Amino acid sequence: MATTQQQAPGQRHQVVVIGSGFGGLFGTKALRRSDVDVTMVAKTTHHLFQPLLYQVATGILSEGEIAPPTREVLSSQQNAQVLLGEVTDIDLEARTVTSQVLGRETVSAYDSLIVAAGAGQSYFGNDQFAEFAPGMKSIDDALELRGRIFGAFEMAELGAVRGDNVDHLLTFVVVGAGPTGVEMAGQIAELAHRTLRRDFRAINTRTARVVLVDAAPQVLPPFGEKLGAKAKAELEGLGVEVILGAMVTDVDERGIEMKFKDGRVEVINTVTKIWAAGVQASPLGKTLSEQSGAPLDRAGRISVNPDLTLPGHPEVFVVGDMIALDHLPGVAQVAIQGAKYAAKEITGRIKGEPSQPPFKYFDKGSMAIISRFRAVAMVGKLRLTGVIAWLMWLAVHLVYITGFKNRVTAVLHWFVSFLGRGRSERTTTEQQIFARSALARLKRGAADLVSDPGAYDAARQLLETTRRAELEAQAAEEARLTDAGQRGVPAAERV
Ligand SMILES: Cc1cc2nc3c(=O)[nH]c(=O)nc-3n(C[C@H](O)[C@H](O)[C@H](O)COP(=O)(O)OP(=O)(O)OC[C@H]3O[C@@H](n4cnc5c(N)ncnc54)[C@H](O)[C@@H]3O)c2cc1C
Image (cartoon, rainbow, N blue to C red):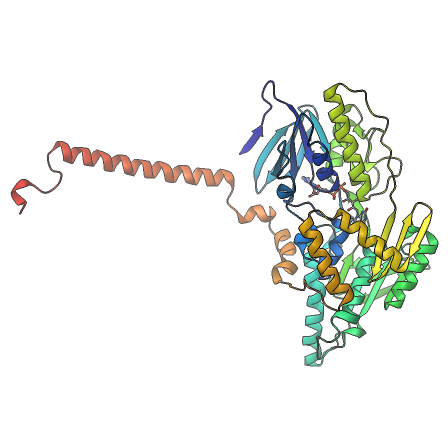
């Protein structure tokens, strides 16, 4: 059953925004004063602050602090409507976007479209690794990793009580030495060496092995050699083993296999693997490419015009992690600035203003946190490390976390974790750890767990028809009794 949002004659300019991430949210907000109706279609009900996912995975922050409901964030924006749904098709000819949720289909018509569907994890053609080495792209991923990391310590304690060798349970491997991998490895080391050190009896968490692996010759390649070397030294100081120049060639439930440039092959026995290497743009890029002829790069990013429009479709803007333009990096600011640019262009066109000059990205700098009080930052020509970089990281993240309430609670949790030893969000459940694999085994995922809209409607109709027939028969019988004077107690029998 499809719900179609059709455009009525004389209706305001309709903008559909795909995605509630940095591009989607900032694009929608930038249209708040425009004479348009905005429909945001996204497959999650929240806006996710991805840079802090690793803190959810390692028990510092709660998922709510980094993923407020989009509906709440936009509640005061009267021209914005939020629809839950995974976009499965974009019809450039008909100017419609089709989305699905639990088998229910919605078709939204647009005059202008902003596509900001981001990117997912790439296993470089080895998608089978995903079952054993979750990525870090969603709240589900972060909660699953939280369950797996804390769960590994629990299983190690049990094994140690039985007298088993638990080295494979106390070994954690992070694949990918970009900012996410570095942050993750640093935090697992802090967990093992500081947070958990007094909580177990049979194991010594300080003996845990935390390994960071990358095929590149340095950590944090975009930060340059000097900052990369500094970050590596800091990580090693924390007890992280950094293995560079090693290509991960196999991953299964027991461990990982790596191949070095000289042909050497090494295996690490580990239960907990985390994949923080490689991204693949949303498959919607392919949908757009097939219809417009715009080429895709190896990571599935689509080539767009300098004004972020799709070639041959000035009404379609693509922003953020999905685009291949001038080697722009896949960072939040590219998505935010691109979305604001697209929103301004749409508003300007309605007002009949001339087009803006081509999109120009303003690089505000990059930073990566290594552990508490340690970070590296690159702002223009400035290279910062240590506490200063860490304070800068703190300030920037506080500015960009959505919502005042979330900022306050995040600061409290940072106090607990950075000044103290604790982690406020260590709750884990079986659902967190196993739900992803369980859902993947269902043919249609979660849709298999709910009734089909068609079947549900048919069943309801049948129920209604039967009930109606029953009621009509009852009414007819009442009428017959009344007409026959047989209703109630006959006068002769009354006392
Ligand atoms: C772990 C991690 C750490 C990061 N750290 C940093 C950092 O420190 N600094 C930095 O600048 N950048 C960082 N990034 C990158 C940054 O988060 C991205 O560049 C940014 O989120 C891109 O914004 P976007 O709008 O293009 O995509 P996203 O923010 O990913 O948003 C995509 C949206 O589209 C939705 N969506 C996807 N497919 C569909 C579909 N078919 N139908 C409907 N909705 C769909 C998603 O649910 C989501 O709402 C990090 C990324 C990750 C994963």
